[in-house]
Amino acid sequence: MQNKRMAAATTRKDRLSIMNQEATAPKKRIFSGVQPTGNLTIGNYLGAIKNWTTLQDDYECLYCVVNQHAITVRQDPAALRRATYETLAVYLAAGLDPEKNTMFIQSHVSAHAELAWVLNCYTMFGELSRMTQFKDKSAKHADNVNAGLFTYPVLMAADILLYQADLVPVGIDQKQHIELTRDVAERFNAIYSNTFTVPEPYMPKTGTKIMSLQDPTKKMSKSDENENATVRILDDKDTIIRKFKRAVTDSDTVVRYSEDKPGVSNLMAIYSCFTGKDFDAIEKEFEGKGYGDFKLAVGEACADSLAPVRSRFTELMADKAYLETVAKEGAARASYLARKTLSKVYRKVGFVEFK
Image (tube, rainbow, N blue to C red; front, side, top):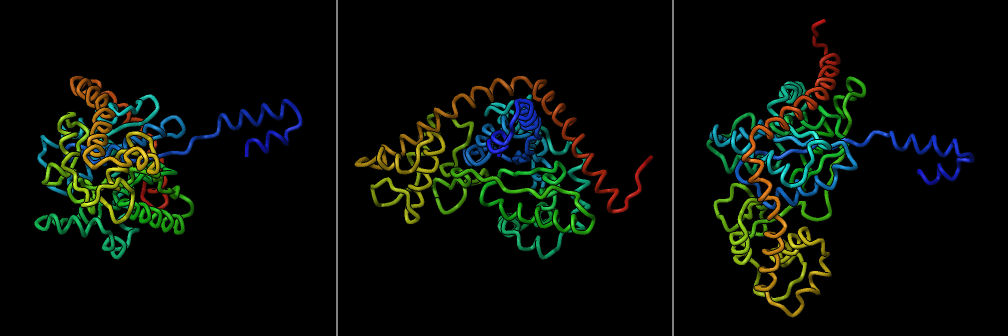
């Protein structure tokens, strides 16, 4: 588009005007977040945080530690507070620049909960009952099937719509929630005129869903009771390599990406994310080699890539004052944007505001 406009411009003044317009055009806005529950896994890293670092120069990015979502499952208060700071530290250690990104803690911006209540009144019971994650978590936490567990997709919608986000980086398992967010936004807009930006999901080509090392038919989970199933961002090198050596594969010996080889395909996806190599290149690299060599290579690539993250994380956790400053400044910026949206919503639904 820019090249066509430049070609059509006949004078130097015209060309300079077009260049200035392009330079001052607003960046698209991105919102995403991770729950501070347990040690983050390479699934969180490859499916979300690592990809965020590639977006920070080209988009206006807001990244939240979504601690309000975390309490749909019972949490130890002290552990939750610690995990909240740890998650923020991982964001920074992974390479997110607080000068380029707005990073904050969800509970520090009250507009999230306030908008969630309004949107609850524009979300249908049937829509929420179809959410697959509610069904999964209800089965897993049968002794605590609370209302928050049922309605948390509405809070997720509020998280996104508060900031008029254009794009939301998500894994495949979260795509259903983005579709619900779009439905709620469109419903509200149809009733009250244009209020919310209708967001689009942003999914990288690889790493959107990293599977368990012990059961490659299931997503890698922070809460998996089998420690060998999950590789955590902060695991040391020996632990990472040991877990990959124990990864489930199959009775074949060929490194090949295929639906009938879920274990090997999962390892190839992980290796691809850490090395940048495509599946054809990986197959050629390990042609004639056994799974032992392949697993060791995946483990080493993972451990070596995460080593700088672990080192920086340790430094950040020793400087709580800095983490608090990042969170406070991020919350101030986020609150400003959120209040603009919430004020518009309150006015449209008929709430009386203070003068």
